Length: 469
Image (cartoon, rainbow, N blue to C red; front, side):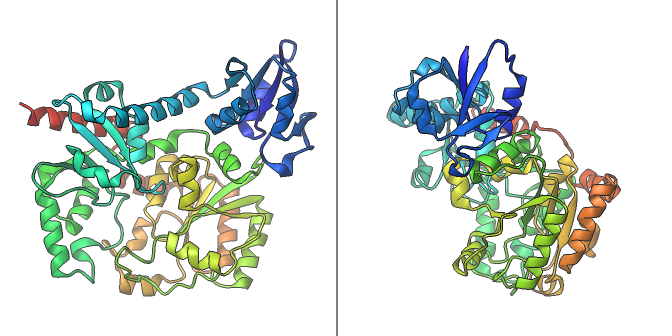
């Protein structure tokens, strides 16, 4: 059998190494990244995709998570459908099924059986919403029993057509006739809601309305119930401890490949570090800090210093800023640093990849007050807290627990050079701050597995079933 491989990342290399080369002869590799063209891996030349027009092979193996778009390219070239073989065929089939179901649901919306509940999974971004994970990990019995749609900005206006609304940012319709399920978007550390310094009477009324018309609130643990309820009061019987669906993505193992595909780079042999600072400007334009985003680490000198740290530790940094903060940074020219890459909401949305699908390959996380750090405790990812605006942020926003440092299971620094020190410590000692991580993890999580979506669906199904009696 003569074959070619479409893709040159980790998945492709792993696949090529798994082949019996006496049975399969790999002729060459094709890839969309111009920087890889006419280079070699394992003595195989990488060509532009147009090379496949020669049709000089029996099969082409799609070795990337973007197999749907790759297949479309090949079909446009006239490559026969039965010659195109996705390596990750289960993921490929799942993506096809999602697309088919979305179109079929839309086409059949006016003919739906009246006694089937319609469930909306709101997913207005691919950074912190829970909807995508609930959709991806939907059990078969849910698909057979309900009409379920993923709701994004393109179809959000149709939200009122649904009976059940699963929200991550209070996105529901808080009136009689709707079943609202709140999942929120992270474990709370910062004050918010009724404990926010800027709370006003209208916001209090809104929370009263939400509380009255929310059926269930999904939770991490009893501690979550306490913290969340201090900010957004609900009756105790509305809480269900399930874990959060998006955390199920952390247990997948293809984050590095997806990063390679998104950015057209190779991460082979490199450490992957994420920098995810918390949002400092809320929906209502309140500023929690006057931190300067002209440079991601404060000044030009500090940013250059951090580049040296990345080089010394053979690391690549992926930065995800709040959209507003990214626009400020990008408007000033961003960076051309070969070791620093920016993940944007638009990028994730176009690829239909959730941020948490990337985080599963993290070797370390740099953050400040972001709840993402808590979620990564499920995978025991080393954490570094870079908090140069600690006093100002604490005064303006405040925390739900003091001293809040007890809830930060990693070194806390305000100087760039100390990040490098702690990265080196983590590389030398796998137990560095591990005890602290485990202590906080056990406080925050009742469940430490990848079954959160299943538990959430079970609770939703049970609630609806009880209402129908």
